Length: 299
Image (cartoon, rainbow, N blue to C red; front, top):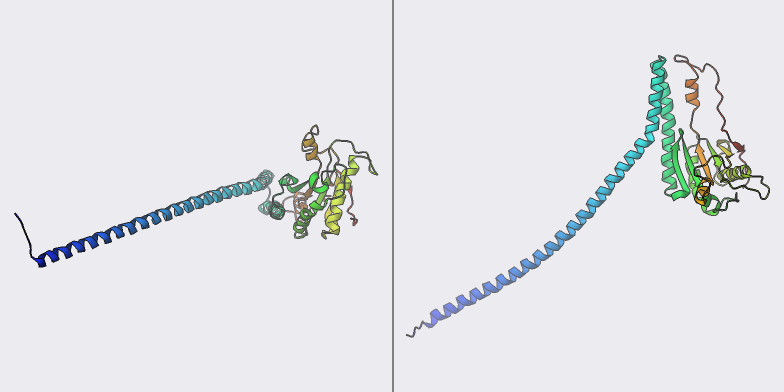
């Protein structure tokens, strides 16, 4: 059988079909746009995730650094706490008065706070120098070890300070000049190999000469007051490593700068009984057991 429709109805059906074709085409384009947008969003999400991971790593590193700094601060304060506790127990045993204990604690705290400030300033100004510069708090004071390779270019017989050591000495002098009430000692140390050349007799002479060279530069070139400095030689007798290897000998050839602890207030307090306002007797400051050379204005 043959079925037929009117022309008007046929055209209407054609228009309806075109409408659905257009709608289908629009839907396909919209879908493609959404898919492209989804790909872009996925890339953005990946980038954001990578950034988040990087930030998390930085945060974790910062937390670790914070923990390390806290531990260092605790280690620096451990000696002060132990000393303060020891003083407290001693005073309690002899029935010391509260005012005496407080004065003694204040003196210890002042000395240790000065040492801590010096230590932090030195580390901030000198930065990381590897084995050439070692800074530590020890025996109630601050010590800086300068290597033979830095100061004298590794020449085991030289006492002429090298040019590459000048920037380190300049930064060191800046810290020392910012703390004008601090006194310090420059100690020369050698290895055990006998020194026998030129005008010097032995390692005693060499160690003193090296210390004096550093002191002269600090005074003449960086304006450190000579009244605050002592140049001393310890020869080969205070070692930090065995002298039977080249590495140990190199470690022992060092120049040590010792920031002398401020003990005047402590000595005055310890020299009197609780309740006294003045020392029971004068106490002479002890002198270091070393061969010392006076500071000179020479170069």
